[in-house]
Amino acid sequence: MPKNPSPRELLPLTPPVFHILLALAEEERHGYGIMQDVARQTDGALQLGPGTLYGCLKRMLSAGLVEEAEERRDPALDDERRRYYRMTPLGKRTVRAEAQRLAGAVTVAMSRLAGEHA
Amino acid sequence: MNPSVMAGFCRLYSMMLYAYPAGFRRDYAGPMKQLFRDRCRDVARTAGAFHILRFVSLVMTDWMRSALRERAAGFWNAGREQRRHSSVTEWAGTILIYLFATTTLVQAYVIPSGSMEGSLLVGDHVLVDRTAYADPGSLGRHIMPYRDVQHGDIIIFSYPEDVRETYVKRVIGVPGDRIRMEHGQVIRNGHRLVEAYTQHIAAYPDNYRDNFPQAPNASTMPRGRDMLEHYVVNGELVVPPGMLFALGDNRENSEDSRYWGFVPRSYVIGKPLAVYWSFDAPGEDLKEWSLGHVVDVTTHFFTRTRWNRMFTVPRSQNAEERP
Image (cartoon, rainbow over all chains, first blue to last red; front, top):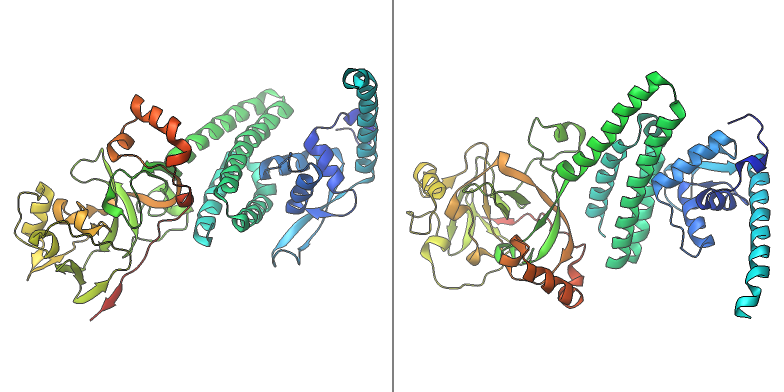
């Protein structure tokens, strides 16, 4: 990956990557928190397994979309330390660009399909 | 899902992680195990068989897909000739791990007889944890938590009289134990066992079965005869080193160590981890799948599946000893 890629080069994002970024949009989360939030966002349609989740995070780290925050405990779970992730500025720009791209696609879809079922 | 199944699943999962490339494992094995356990806990709270089934299938597909993907990433990103070679060996590694996982760690087994009724029913499909009592010296023993076979453990083992068959029984005697039975009650080292797990359905009086050991009769198999000939001291059976004495929980309707002798320790395959499916069908149908059985299963899958048995755990249970 180049050092300072523009978000456009990374589009389109795969659904897991897109939803992981959305999960991190508001706060830092650990792996399990991301997984739960992605399931909530998609009404349970996208269930990330451990391998898929950490595989994506690995690639997102090397692309500079996310970074590791410090390890700490999650009071809601137990006393084990968990690795937290946060979104980078590039991650934020990228997810915004992806959302715009999708919005554009939705607009096209609406206008073309509007006649069919109306 | 109870804690011991969860621990079993977590153990299997940490073995499954060996399918990922070493670098990936180094960075993420810890968090992945954590995530897996968190998910398990989640699923355990809902406790529906359907949820557990969905979870298991999600984890399996995730594992297959992502392990291959991480391997492939290593392969394509490397690009250079000399790295290519190591990637090929890494791939071979992954395939070996898949084979290893499905043959060495777990095994599916169907209960074909009612000898363990009370704990296991005919038609229970169980996953066998093959690592639990891995033979001393085998690979499994060095990398897995290990505990030797103890009183009250349910074991799955190769039938000593015909090793092609697999049996399931409960361990009553370990090496050094003195065993006899009086009126169907086991007396071990002079203590009367109170066995909560047994089921007593007296079919017909049988002196040999209920007051053991005795002189061999027509139902005693060759190895049983050998045991009675060499290991009875003062009316008690003495379990020799490297052997186990195993009985069925359905004590009056069980062909067990009383008839075919000791189970060599090395014949033990593993312990039942959980019932993953229970289908009400005659024992003979379960041993070999016939066309009739396939039709039977497809037409009666929902009605004859014993849903309440799914993901139950046949448990080790020690008998209380009374003087």
